[in-house]
Image (tube, rainbow, N blue to C red; front, side):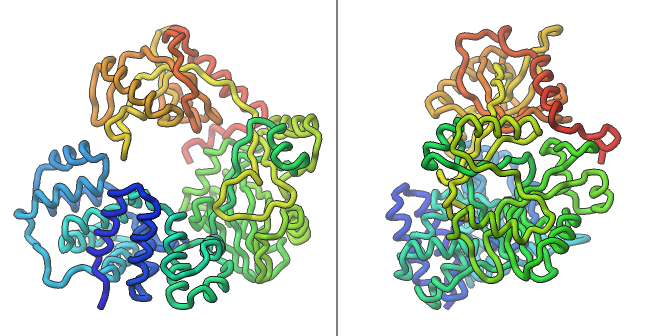
Length: 568
C-alpha cells in the first residue's frame, strides 16, 4: 500500500512545531523506515523542500504569479484574505493553508475518496516540470489546479512549500544525514561521506533502505552528477591563516568570476555552476577547451571562469552573469563577452575519488592533465610579508583577493572549514542613510529588517539609493530599529515603509557595480551593516560623489564593459 502524502505533511507539521534536534531526527528516521523502497528518495527530497533530487536538472518553472493565480481561482475569495494571512504568518505555505481552510465551502472539488500519495505528488511535479514550450503555462496551471484541488489544506501547505522551495521546518540536510543513519543502522560518517560523493542524500537514503551499510559504502562519484563545492571561511589577514595552517600555506589568486564544476567522460563535457545548475550551453568555448586539452578519459575538475575586456583585464562579475543567463544567441555572446578559464582543483580522475588526497598532490595531478589551460596563480609560503605582497598583487590585477589552502587538506564537498580561507583586501566602509525598509520573512516577518541605503547628493540634498541589505544587525538591534523606523514613517507601500532619512549606518560591501536599477547608476554588492552610527547626522553621511570615486577606482585594475554592448 502506498504511503499517503498526508503522512508526510503531518510529519513536516511536527518538525515545524519543535526545535529539538534529537526529536526531529527520531521522527524522520521512523518515517523513512516505514516507507516503501520507491518512496524513500521522494520523501527525503520533499522533506527538505525539493521537488527532485539535488542533481536533477529538471525545474518546475512555476512563478509566484502563476501559483497565486491558481490559488485565487481555487479559494474563490478576495486576495485580501491571503494578504492578511501572510502578514500574520510570514510564510506562503501557512497562509495558503489558512485561506484553503476558510474557503472550503466555496471549493467545487472536495476531498476525493482516494487520498493523495507521495508517489502521486511526485508524478504531478514531474508533469509540471515536463510542461514546456508553447502553451506550457496553461498546462502547468491546469496541473497545479488539479493537484491543489484534491489536496487537504494541510497537504496544500506543504505542496506549496515544495513548489517554492522553502520548507522552513528547521530540518536541514545535516539532520537528514543523521536520520538516514539512524533509520537504517548505518554509521553517520558513512552516510555523510556517501552524501558528499553522490551529491544527494535522497539517493543515499534509497540505497540504505535496499542495500544497507554495504551498499552505502560502495557509493562513489558519478560523472555528470554534480556535487556541492568545498567552501572557505573568511580570514581577517594572512597572519591568521598562517597560524591556523601551522605556519605554512598555499595561496591562490581569488578571481572575480564564477566557480564551475567540469565533468568529463570521453568527449562528453558538462559544466555546472556553484548552485549545481547545468550551464554547459552558455560556455561552448570552455567545453571545446576542456575537450581539446584535458587528456584523460574521466575527470571532475573545478575552476573559475572570468569575463575579460578588450585589453584582457577582468570585467566585473555582473557582466559574466550575462553569459550564464543567456540561452539564445550564444555565438554572439561568445564574441561580445569572452571568458577565460582557470582551473584550481581535481576531485575525481579515471574512476578514483581524490577527495582524501592532500591538496598539494591534487594540484600536482591537475597540472599534469590540464594541458595549456592555466591554473590559478599559486604561491606556497610561510612568510607573512610575502603573503601580503601576493595579496596586493592579486588586488592590483583586478581579482578579489586570495584563497589560502592547507597543504595537506582533503576535499570536503559542501563543507566550510578552516582548511580553506578566503582573504580579501577590505574596501573602505561607507556611512549611509536608511531611507526605506521592508518587513522580513519567517521569524522576522514582524520586523523591518531589509534596509534601503542611500548616499547624499550634496548639491541638492537628495538621498540616492545605492543598495539594500538585511545583514549585519542583531535581533535586538532590528527590534529597536523597527521601533525607530515606525516613528519615522511617512508612507507605507506593500510591506515597505518610506521614512524620514535620519538614521546613519556604517556599511561594508564587496564591490560597487553598475546598476540601471537605481537613479545613481550604481549599486553595492553584498552590502552588510557593520554598526549603527548614532554619532553621525544624515548631513555627515557619505556623498554620492565618494561612492562614485570608489566605483571609478575599481577600474584601475578591472576592465570596463564597452558602451556599444550595454544593451545586449
